[in-house]
Amino acid sequence: MATRHTVVDGAVAQLRQLLGATYAVGDRLPNEKQLAEELDVSRGTVREALGVLATEGLVSRRWGVGTFVSPPLPAASLNMSTIQSYRDRVQRGGHTVAIRESSCTLDVPSDAVLAALGLAPGTQTWRVDRLFTVDGTPSASMSEHIPTELYGVAIDPHAMTSIDTDLFDMLNSHVAGAVAHTATDVAAVTVDAGQAAALGLDVGHPVLRAEQVTFDRDGTPLAHSVSLQRTDLVRMHITR
Image 1: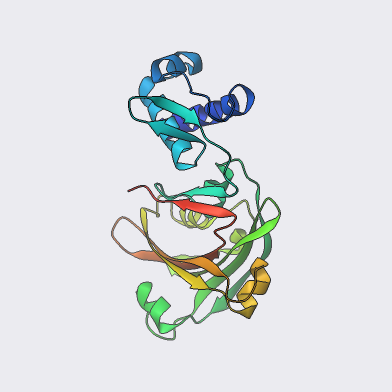
Image 2: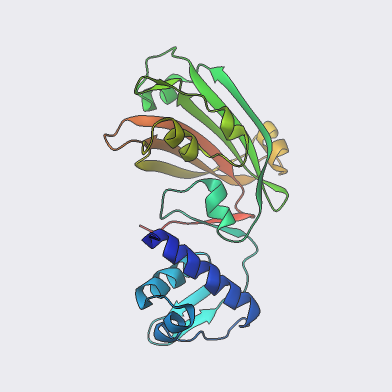
């Protein structure tokens, strides 16, 4: 049986096709009842799917008036309302995500990172570094620290160096259902020379820095991540 998430994703995909094939910028879409009949889904599913498209900037919803096709955004959208990887969030907007550079090594992170992971100073962890591209252009650099063992299970994150495996896939493959929620702090920062070279920017260019800790259901930290994201290629939408 299809899950609610799968049904909504299917409706989002169908609506995205309709937008590209049938409607022009500024056109008003049929009402939720008509769209539900056309897509053979419930009105609630249509409402959720339109909400996703609205957060991606593909449509605008005017209370009491209707839903309209929006002009295309110059950047991909990054919806932060659910636990998904960077890859999945951007690809959901119809863009191609790839890894240009990656590495997986053993490392002793800073005391601040170890404290966030609940580990003692000097503890060795896995470090996974990845440089992502969106539609062929460098878009985000990520550095993730992961304990070498969780729940007595040895962790091997080498699969994350491929675009086919994200952090959540990797963790759940070692311990099924391990990932429960994330906490992310976002700040605007400027890039130094090394960061600028990797992301194809000028030194001092502003980017978004996201520091994320991934937890299990008991609040045990599973991973610590820091990413630098170009805002001219990817826009972040946070729904709370």
